[in-house]
Amino acid sequence: MFQAKPLTFQLESSQVAFAASYLQGIAFDHYTALLQFDPNNPMLSNWLAFTQAFSSKFGIFDTVAEAEENLFNLQMHDNKCFTTFIVQFKWEAYKTGWNNNALQFALCHALPQ
Image (tube, rainbow, N blue to C red; front, side):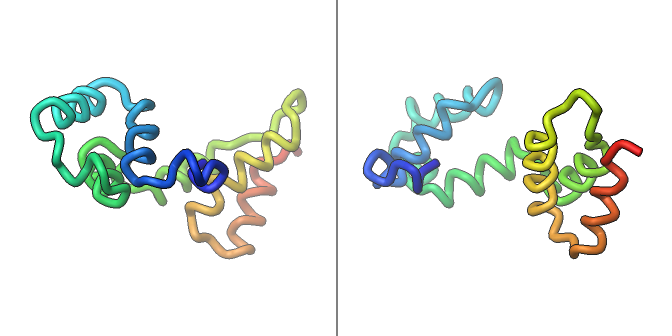
């Protein structure tokens, strides 16, 4: 997203603010508290600090395991668009780090018989 609009997101603080606009629940409450009570906190102006802090506090602990589970559960149904399916498959596949043989097996498992 940031590379698609380089002028809009020149500053890391703009990147943080954009990402924070998608926060919900306790993560949003934490961000709001930082803005109000600790406006000079590096998490508000540094993309790496923001992503590391919020991922460790509120994010998925094991993104590889989650991607593996998502790949295992992904199924191409007869009424589903193949392009949508393959984009979802590739999105999860990139996160697993699996080699081509493992991905080929997972893809065959996900396709209708």
